[in-house]
Image (cartoon, rainbow, N blue to C red):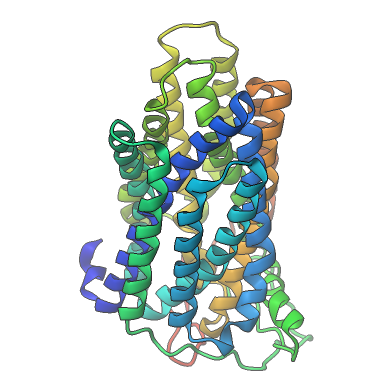
Length: 443
């Protein structure tokens, strides 16, 4: 897996991802505690609203920025986004009202919506070879998971010495370091999309694992901003991925929104246990990310991703039972085990995502389709974050668990129906310089 670190450009980008994620992890813990200070038992509702605003920024901003990105060098775009996020993080310790949190979260996440698709679309250009890119995806997932483990542990240690407001300063430092690393990376020249459209007379087989053709780029920002979505929705297995994203979003929403409510409320644990619970979620995801590259060398993505959605359904059933159970010290380790399991099944869905996208479109369409996936997948969180927060606050955590479990079940069924296994499916090989893909038969 570590062989991809021989690529100097990728090392700079990977390091930028790590330090930015570490800062974001500190902000996640601090934001939860800030919400609890401002709203008390209704902290889940505040976090659900704040994260819904985050998703609105992702859904609305990412496609538009991608449509305009050809006018801005990618290095400059990503660095400016990091600087904006650092400035917002430095402002968060001074908020005194809930509405101020909402405004700052929108600005910060709008900058993230500009940064992340640009970052994701660069990686397959830096590492075009199949095995290298697969391992880069696992390393990226491992970075997310390590952050979920390390930053809560670091936050717990820091909270023993300082107030949570100081954690936002660590967030700003992470974004500033990310900007420096992005500026120092030698990024490849982007491939411009060609104005080519697949002939209407050629009907695309439902089972084909090939690029869906290129949409005409069009002249306006609106046409370019919806281009990736048109490409994304043209392929059945990418539509299945959207359903899988919804199942993964349901799991992560329950963890991110209601961890502080579970720990500080029904379980009656101290604030320092909030990062421990979040760390359990990251640990489960990290274990899967470490094991998955070898698994994906032998099994198709579909075989790995679809069962995970139904695993999430079972975990929500267990969580509902735990929530309804009476008091007892045993509930704390069980919650940690459930959080770790949620992280594991979520990683089974999210880690192979880049492979499926990369294998589904021509190389010049990668920025558009990555932006579409970023926007559409965060539309899933736009649904699940407020559902986890508002429903948990209004009807209780058991009701929220049952509702999100039902969402996961429906998502798994829809994904299974859309992404059917077909013997002898044709899979694309890594794209050559021309942007066209070869084909290899997979079982």
